[in-house]
Image: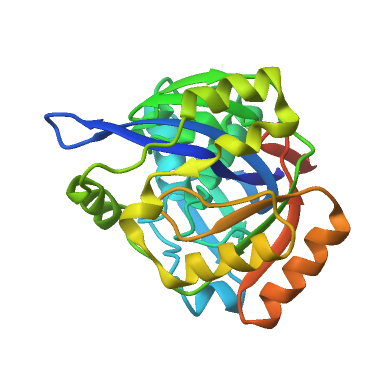
Length: 288
């Protein structure tokens, strides 16, 4: 079975506290977008085999493990262990989502593996959050208000069909480092995440005014600022980094404007694509 599995952006992302166990609490609006990995899964008699197809433009900047360290492999192992199954599977991932971008590329692959195995066997796992806080969101996708450490997910009004340019440079910061920098911020500006969630419902055409990301103040990557400026100069209503970085998305009023901006970004050496916000994570590409 093969599915296309979507990336996500954080339309808004705020860090609201830190728990005794070291985890940070967040408030965010998650949105799936039409930038996809392809994940193929088939059942075999035993063992888990994982192969990856990674474009050179991603592989040269980010190392993606294609072994038991990969979250997709861990998803298959969790599925078989929890269901007491002695069979195995073969997984092939074709990357279309940049890694270390704040777009959930690994988590969406893991969710796709759980989805495919569920379709193939009729079984499921009870706690997909064991794999990572973003994995439960990707099992459905769409638009959601997310709280806690990412485990409290409330679907909100459909925000699909909005035109985005997504771009990323070579710079990056690990999630752990990004959170440590958050802890060092003094009197930061906090995005109005709840107002965004309300605006998505009541006034979606102007909801972009509440887009924002606390991590921009902590990470401070020159490439992020440069990409944002190119997007804003190119007609974007708003341009914001997603997750802990380092991809940036800008929202546009027309596909023509977005395409021109994306070409400008590519001409300067950045990965850039035009896509839309989408209402779900998975598109079935091939069903066996």
